[in-house]
Image (tube, rainbow, N blue to C red; front, side):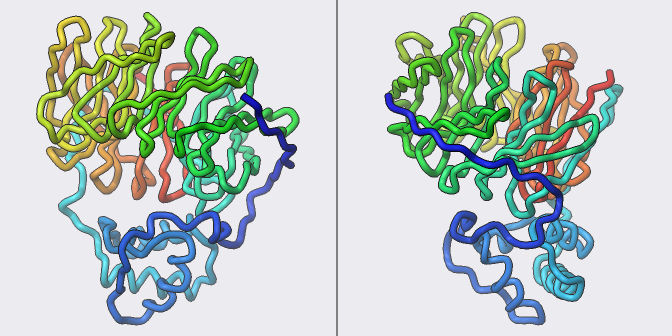
Length: 407
């Protein structure tokens, strides 16, 4: 399949005093929303609606004034007077909802969380990964960029991608190239950080979502809205795509080469054959179950977060047996990101404010949880570093983070 190449300049720096371009950034508008009357109403309508629908405000969990102010400051640089007026207005009409506070569980494990705010405001940073050289990369989905962070110095730089790409997630290859899923322009893209050159591979699926490299050298990806799975041969550029169950989401490769797929539109988990692209489906109990991400332990078990029912679960592929545990914050916890480190399960409760990081030990069946410092957003994906730590992010507050597991 023919590819397209273009050269992109590297953009560095930390001062961005405006909004991302509205034509590229408007997302999530949903139904028409009318805000309550009051001082600050017009400012919110004129400024906030440039980048997202007002339904993101009316459906939020609400915050106190310092919380609203902190969130505003990650989205746009405003004069102090306007930021105060807006934060007061939002606090009055959309106050914090104490019922969404997480139920925290103490324990013996110890972690250290470090977070960095990314340079371009309003980009909704997400899905950080670790490159072979140890640098941390993230995708700024609404600003169509990929950012690089040196975790030792905190230095950051941002590479601008094709404006229509809106990259959803990243994955590095062994050569240091950064691959991304062009969620809005139906492409898989490859960024060479040494030259800034980007190569695009068009897909049939309109919305490539999450990708993973297989030991066979091929890149496999999901496309949620299109309901498709795909395989890209980086050497030839050939892409093969197949239809699958509705809304395939997270994707992981097992030690035996099987590719496991989470489904966010049905109560199923899929086992994809990397050669034939045939899928064997396993049903999770309860038709309301929905799975965004999953993880694999060394005993061959498939672990997942059941976001619709506030549970985490374990699938035994050999027997089809499924067992689930209720998350500490209950049915509305909405487990989302998911990872396995040394056969211990890590995930977040995305339905809570602040967002909570949860540890579950399968051997003892004990939970432990912590608040994410900037937890007004949502962790949507984890990355396990070569040191055995976790990379996290907060989309709403434009941060990427490192969780050092110290136990």
